[in-house]
Image 1 (tube, rainbow, N blue to C red):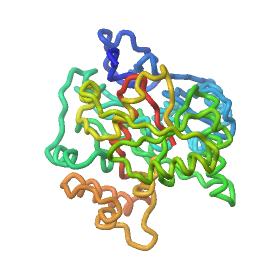
Image 2: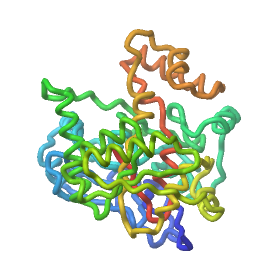
Image 3: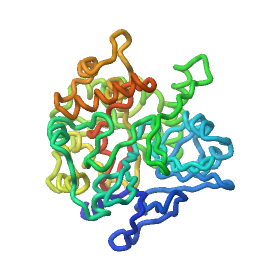
Image 4: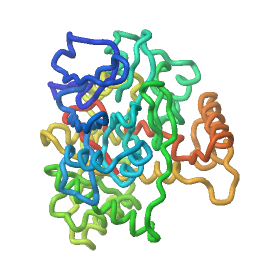
Length: 401
């Protein structure tokens, strides 16, 4: 891991040019006011244009209904079918992947994260310059700036490995949450319009999309991995990937802190579906890897699961890790069926730290929900534990649902 690059697979849109240590990065002009897109050479970026409309995809985008399509083919098909901003959101609804989409549609400049905002979109102003980036540390390094973090945020991150609301590791940057998008001209965030599935069988529809996404992963990438436990997410991923299971490598980690049932159930599920599940006991996280994480993040948090990542760094030049995050989904995506949504209800559901920052952010989001339009709990959490495993590591493994 001697060739560690903390900003591998990262991007930044900004009005500030850099030609020194970032001189080898790729650059693309954006129509928005004086903004340029800079991205690490390892990060795939594809562009399609038709007259005045243009789509730029940072990362990868998957079409579960057409799983063999490439990034560019998905974008071309998308642009061919879109005639308005509303139409764009409708066509994006079933697509998967881990991407940030820059859309120039009907005269507007939009920055749209993937469905779960797994490829981060952080935006703000540093030294009076516009910044949109996937990494707070990259943003600070680009401007040779030091981290700024209020005392309430510092108190909060000492107790949690996830952000509540739109918080980031620097006060000048704000996170675009799942199901939201950024107007690049106005630097304002809005809620994506909800697209009602055109089906009377929503469970079958969701199952079909997930299975199609697994087929797209198997078609697009070599040696994709699925990391398993004994939970519901693993069962869903196993079932969805069964038709293409010969393309995947299935792994369950047996660390000292792993629940016995996670390993036992993963093996049982594999046997039942006739899928080979490898049981791996990864070594403890090395000091070198901890130092690399310290380099890649402004406020790094460490956990034992990072040994899973280190165990596979460098094993393949490029590969994708598919892993469910149902624990985060269930605690943040659904409102309580009977109780009135309040700060207390959210504390009962999520058990977040009892801090000033957390209280203030939850109150703000509840107020937004009550005064504007329905804001489900899906928008309230970004799990930094998952973030640390998908950003800023060499041979970056990608995680998607």
